[in-house]
Length: 392
Image (cartoon, rainbow, N blue to C red; front, top):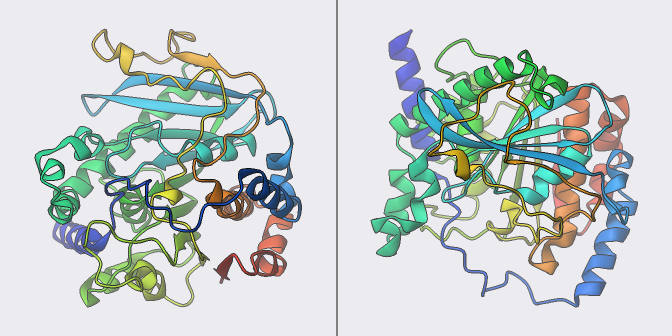
């Protein structure tokens, strides 16, 4: 069993050796011509008004107020900054989304997506599993501009297993906090969990869904992969057959997501892993026309105030303990508009990601028949001219 697990781990890790990292952020090179900000905003609002009804609140002038808690946990003996975002008020029970950032990102990454999901009634926990992943862009290889070597270095099998162990530890700590009187965690439903990853985080999410967890830890009920890479090696593709056919998996990518690391041989490799999954799999693909790989990270203008705390302040003073009250790194945000994407040309794509992902989560974490019906009957037409939509 141990030998088989090690082999499967190596195959998954090798397959994600083709994963395109977040890479150097070339914001000065837009993926499309710049657009008038007000016109782009209006097009996004019009698209949202015609979208999934369960995400209609995203188009309202004032968004759902959010509670944000950033803390320094101790997981597997190591300090780990984590951030939990949840709606103020609303349902008494909130399904949990675990968000895994990309290479070079912190627990505060993906704010646009995390806030949208929280406003839709989910608790969203984010963390960067390994310090070396968070500091990747200040490494020697990054300073030498050897981004391909940097990408491959962070996609080794032992590091994948280390990330999976941290994910396992985080879920165990979350369970402890939910039963210890921690006021925010008492609302979190740990029986309904989805794992969501961007870039390198998508590889970890896939490996978790494929059963590479260190122990028989809680299984996620759904997986979302934001801008994952394709799989080209036959042995790696075979390893994907270990994905439970019933596992709902949503892959979100773009036809123009350039590989800045030079790892990918062609753009087609970005979706090859999806095609390698068994035809009977419960798999969905949102393939957008225009956004860059970096745009799919959900970088946000952070319109809300105050800014999201990092939780880093407690790192050297001792990590937070469950059930110890609110603490100095907790913020309850007042009502404010949802944050806008930094590149105005990405706003329509952002709406598409919000509505498709929220409908997907509502179907598979809440068993919402309206969400299932919308994805089956309306999503493809709604996305006409913006993206390709594939579903089971």
